[in-house]
Length: 317
Image (cartoon, rainbow, N blue to C red; front, top):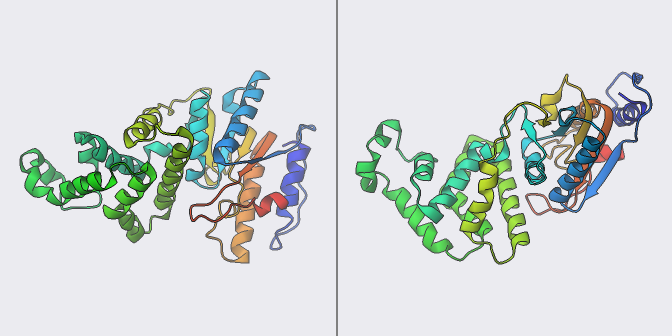
C-alpha cells in the first residue's frame, strides 16, 4: 500500500488496546490522499463513488482494479442501482445481487400478485410462508386451486382491495405483515434477510419521494424490473462488490469502503468493548485491502428504525 493508506490504517488500529503494537511499512511510493465523502443520502453517496470510478477509468484504470467493500450485503443496494444507471459494469463476489435475493424476490412477487395476478408470482409465494402446499400438492394445483389455496387467495384479494390507491411503501409493509412473511423470518432469526427487506422498504420510499405522481404499484414494478432483469454476473472488466469479510486475504488497487456510519460499520449488534475492538480490526482489514487509492464514504439520513444517521467512529480514528 501507499504511505497514505498505511498511515490511515495505523491510526485506526492504534485505538485498539488489546493488541501488540507493530509498525507497518508501505511498499509503494507516495500516492494520493485517502478521500472521504459525506453524502446527503445513500444514493448521492453512491453517485460520488461512481463519479470517482469514472475519473479513474479516464486515467486508464480498468474497472476490475476497483472494489466496493461494505460491512453488510444490504449496504450496496444503492450502489448497485447507481452503477446500473451510470452503465458501470459490476459483479458481486460471495453474494447475490440485491434484487436477486430470496426475500426480495418473494416480497416483489407478493406485489406482482396484487398488481397482475400472474402465475409465476403465485407459484413462488403460495407456500412462503408455508401453507401446506408442498411440491406434491402443487402438481395438482391448477385443478384444485380454489380449495387448496383459499386462504392465500383471500389474503391477496383482501390486500388488493384494502391497498388500492395507497402508497407503494404502505402496500409493501401491509403485505409483509399480513402475509406472515416478516414474522416467519423473525421466528427463524434471519436478521440479514430482515435487514434486506428494510432496505427494500427504504428503496420504495426513495422511489416515492423522487417520482412524483407517477407512483402507482404498477409504475414501481415496471421501474424495479430494470434491476431484477439485469445480468451482472459475468466476469471481465467489472467493478467488484463484496463484503469486508469476503475481501479478507485479497488486495485491490482502488478500494471504495462505503456505509461508514454508526450502526452499519461498526455494526449495531456490537455491545461490548471487546466486540468493538473486533469491529475495528475488521475495518483495519478493509482499509488495508487498498494498494493505490482508498475512498471512504458515509451518508446522512435515517436508519431503518427512523433514528438519525451519524458517521462512523472509525472515521474519527
